Image (tube, rainbow, N blue to C red):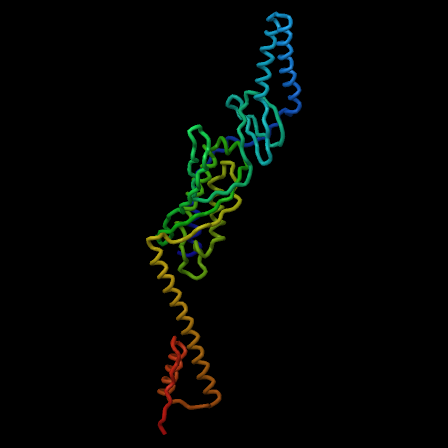
Length: 330
């Protein structure tokens, strides 16, 4: 299979599931939290003043006003939220998406609004890596963070050879509404789609191309990384995620065939080296015979010429030092 047909097969198999782009991020401008802060302080101050007044006058009437003031104070506290750098807040009110706030600072909105935090930082994920559960104490405190294990994916390349492969994917959220509402747990979605895309891509290329200059997993890492990025863009389109870069981070034969493939690579290298040596030796013999004939150093019969060529090839190709034989015939 040539390079063009291999690329066409990889492109044909990269048919991602189309996500319904029902939700798209839209900006929302909440009330500044600093403007609402005096109102909140006035509510608690009014509640306290009414309680003090009721205690002085020994009458429960001011208490009736202090209770709603205190409830409004507590309710107003639920409306405050903070947006940190490289973060956003998606606002949902009674099941309706109101918009996304990306402006950094203290804000206030309807206290009944659910404010879902989404980080906009660039994140990195390596396929085959998983975070273990943290070690917890009896009181529920984290004693030790879970170690991150790494297990490369085992797939078959185009020749059917089992290989182990991993890739690093650099991504970030660009549409908070799609990331939250189009898929379930967008971080896990990115991990699963990255592994699926890598498996699909690796099965359409040779580990080592049998043709000189052909596309292979080992010899064309930049091209494979670019095609992996293109396939991920197709799979994650509609989930509010942008893939910035993807690269092969680990590639090797599976342990059960690693030794045999190493011997194959060594044999291929030896054959290639021998071929170069023979090509060079033939050229040197041809040049030597031309020089002898041009300078008329000697005239050889066909039998002598054949013997001369044989001796020169043995000297040039042999791995051991030549031991010349001097004729003593008169």
